[in-house]
Image 1 (cartoon, rainbow, N blue to C red):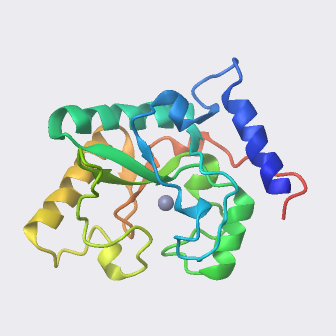
Image 2 (cartoon, rainbow, N blue to C red):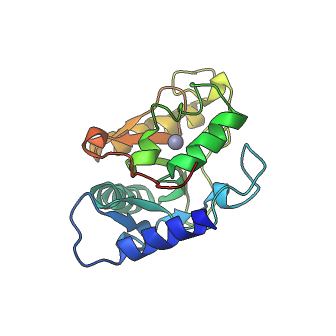
Length: 201
Ligand SMILES: [Zn+2]
């Protein structure tokens, strides 16, 4: 129930007129051509549990704008589109994930918080015009060394896909995590604090 209220609050926020570049917005209002596949709103995630009551991706406005620019670039130059798995992640969800996977290589410790909790990180992949995901060597949320961008024991097409994703995202202000090829922090993530969740453990 409390989680539902939080998401309702976020949806209301995203339609507020008084927006600036740090406002939390619904990504769809910025770019409806980015495919959304919010795995944490389904059981198809590493916890096997539905963690989000809503499959809407929220981000800081400047982060959503930058992601939209990257998406347009991928589309115009390569006929690819971005598919996003996760953006803003409420802190109480971070705590749940930490209970299930207390390993800082893959899940941020909630006492420090994740850049997702600030609305300044994205988990993404690329799809072709038919909606098929490109091969990046592992699935999203693969907790093995193969998920690292530094793991190089892959055939060339996979390494080229990884190189392209990283280069284009860098160009639009995103920095890749060195343990997950799909995770990118927005370069100015420190500007944004973690929203306080009163009454939510
Ligand atoms: Zn992530």
